[in-house]
Amino acid sequence: MNLTSLPTIKELLAKFGAVPKKKLGQNFLINPKAGERVVTAASLQPQDLVVEVGPGIGTLTKMLAPHAQRILAVEKDRKMVDILQETMAGYPNVELIHADILKWAASLLRARMEFLAPSKDKKYKLVANLPYSAASPIIRMFLEAECPPKVMVVMVQKEVAQRITASPPDMSMLALSVQFYGKPEVVEYVSKGSFWPRPKVDSAILRITPHKRLKTRGREFIAAEQFFRAVKAGFSHPRRQLINNLAEGLAMPKEIVGRWLSQNGVDPARRAETLFLKEWLTLAETLPGPTSQNH
Image (cartoon, rainbow, N blue to C red):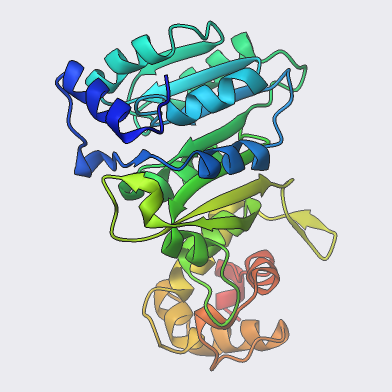
């Protein structure tokens, strides 16, 4: 069964009384080369465990199945699960899970990994054509999880991929939220004509490789809470100078903030989007505490 064939897709949907749901980002892949590129980018090994989010009718799932030991395909739409039970019938290594991935507790995900992952490190790969509306929170959820994937290869909106891989002077909260946990790179862009129904924008194949906890100056690990406290304050008001955002967002006197920035080689007049990840890490490491504010 050719799941990239538009007549086949329409026939399957009609058979199960299903229609593409825009709110769920159901745009089905009709360009097999794009799917094959995703599989290649994931560098799958025979022992790999793969988690796929939003498999739809199973187009990408079918391409992944011959290359991995197990696949957990998590699908929110009940009718898509019904279709998957037919299209994946010949693939015993594919397990279908009817769930909203964002509501599927991390503890359950970890328990499933412990049970299924064949290797000692219990690692897995996330490979998916993510729904546009939920791509960013899904990516963050997996990166922040207690057991993050060893690599993520996902198709997302082109603009989202560009924001995630941005560098100064175009940094954003989203870019830092991802780059704090891993290295993102665009593998290639995928035209909107590769999907049906045809979306309004192009997509991108994005590969994110989670890294070990980040250190600054080789001394200590930076706590995520501390890092994002500084970043959130810095980005609180677009186009405002860093000193004003940080003073307001962190409830600190401007003179304290100015001295803190200057001591770390950061011009207080700069804007948040111009700072590199390393600069944010250094600021987080040296974030003034209550004692510092009293001096």
